[in-house]
Length: 454
Image (cartoon, rainbow, N blue to C red; front, side, top):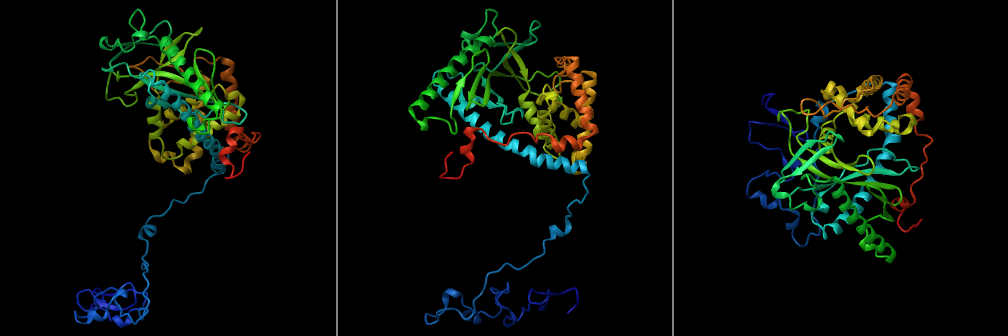
């Protein structure tokens, strides 16, 4: 028998691949994986009965066979090696900061967002019974923009209620030179759908739609409060202890005294790109109802869907981790409060275009990318210009996201960023240590063990 053809079985026996001979069954151990092999002639097979076919006088088979999976080497582990790299001190501190500071805020964010969505969705289930133009299934949560996750501050978030212009879904938009907003006009065949909310010029009036929806939300909140007074908990959303609506032009619902939700009527506008092949310009967007001046409501562009898709595309590497770290740092620096979460996301979008290869955002390069984002922010503050990521020529006029910030605000933020770049370990080790670790009173019930009440 040649050496190439000879192999060993699990019990150490030699056998030839080219031979029909089988191993001697008497040499098989009880734990062998070859217990079910046909090792003899057909006449001998009767003696190799299964455990269920032994004579009745035998209480148990003579040998207790064990069904064990034979050991086999994991070839993937031997062939695939995990990358080994030494993290620098700043990278280590960035990861510790993320684990110890950011994750706590993320957990609280998820809890609050779920409570808020359930409450607003319940309101719209009641509203759509009166006016089916406002449907509960058309509610879209924009999520908590990571601001105000401290126990001392209220949480603010936006929710869009997507409205349909009519059966044709056709809409015409134009820039309003006076307000800088968008003028929206439905097709002639859909005028009857929003007849009570159309201006004399044939445009959809943002103020009229907002006032109508506010009236409906106020009635729905009143019904939920009646259920609370009557103790009808089965009629209430989960974990909702209180709900109210603020006065003012914006439809702002306060849930559990700490969660503030702005409900924004919105229409989806069709693709208006000059070049449909462009990827740096979103194919779809919204116009949302926003306040202008003196309680006047106008339609403004919103790229919520495009932002979500872009964030989803950047999920590999350390990009999302850095986005959350920078926003957490912003929340703990008073002089950076004017730096919105949208500003931070825009910085990440631009920096990702500069380094499109996801390998440039691997875990071992987190320090380099952290300073890169800070350097981009530093340059934008010096120039007083942060270009809008989506609103770019030729489809849009250039938009500067820092246009509303005065010189002193930009200078103060620049000083803070320069301090962080000179001493990153200081901000990563101390930021947020003074934050109170207590929970909201209504939140206690979510974490108490069963049978224990606060």
